Length: 341
Image 1 (cartoon, rainbow, N blue to C red):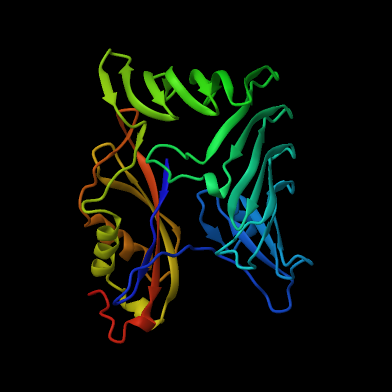
Image 2 (cartoon, helix red, strand yellow):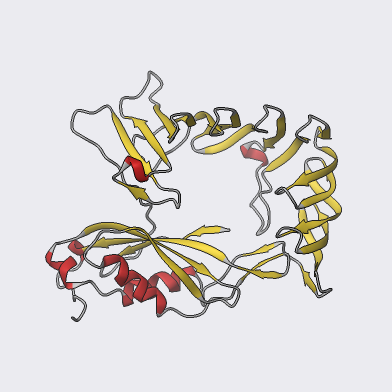
């Protein structure tokens, strides 16, 4: 699992930001972004997992064309955005993604950056895998902690084309990887009644019961027979007193390196870390660095943070990866205090 937290680090304010590394030259008609495998950004095409190209000049409908490409030159994604800002894409109309061999993978429809109508997913061999339908605005409900209640699975088939769900009803055998399977009934597009299967490459087996698409109870059994009862399928790690408290902690404990102050470093860096099964933040990684020791200072602040409550998958503690963009803005700090040397 991957989660995102956002920090705007100034003297008085902490906010939500996204980080993109973009190269934009004067007179160009496109913004080119090189994206790394870990979600970070780089100035070097050879270090990128794919290249994203956003057209600055809109079409007649005011939309900006987006094309992402794999390193082999094949199209990865094509779509349209209301904005010409790669930091804040707002999709409109049809967005298509492709496998690295060029085969169509997904087709999603958007209105004002919200999924609408239907979305299709295909197997690499071209067979339609599933179709989801999204509720109209007037029918939408507030999402639960477990599932998106504003969509329904109306069609599902295996890779040979054998249909299992039609018009939202049927018995599905869903492969989640090459080993694990989840199977049970769908009624009107939502999971219903008893489901069973395995996860984490068959290390665990589970039984769970659904009502209106939500798990009401379940039990996991490991290879030694130990059982883990649960009432939520997935539980995210939780920082003491919530996310806002974590953001405040980072804002209060980040120490600007002296070199960064002298260089007037401004921008956003990106740090990833894992909340392990005991709730400890570990495995820190610099996804995007601004230099001058700024990323190391962010990691030092994170290492001082409190222990989290761990995440759970079907009652079993799991490792969860987070990504934390940190905004550095010395203009909000008239008298910044650099880190001691």
